[in-house]
Length: 135
Image (tube, rainbow, N blue to C red; front, side, top):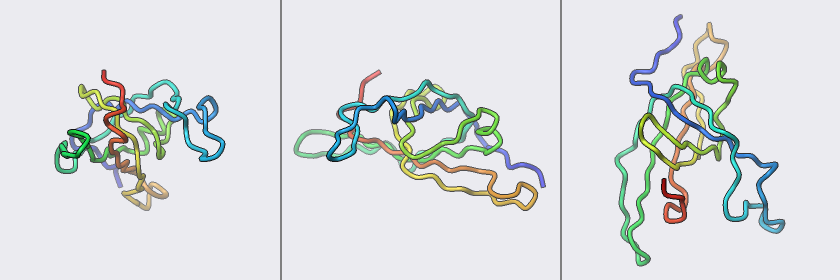
């Protein structure tokens, strides 16, 4: 069987979380202020925004939340010597600069001749959008 193709691929820039150089709170074991990331890796992926960028009105003001997923081919990730993981930051999708984080990773496209899954679906969402750096 042939490898699955992406319908509308674009360049996705992903930055991996660097746990070694990130300062952690010893009690909660969470990053203090801003987590450190490695340099970015560019991989082809297919973006799907679930719904749209939703603006939520709260007592503190307007909060924009973005949610969706990016579909990657495993061969493209292997060629870049990179595997998408939870807490990775997606910094750019095509020409759209973003600041969203991977929340969930799902393996898809289990073909017999590929010895397992051939697609990776990475779900993303905003985290504390009011605290993110504006580019």
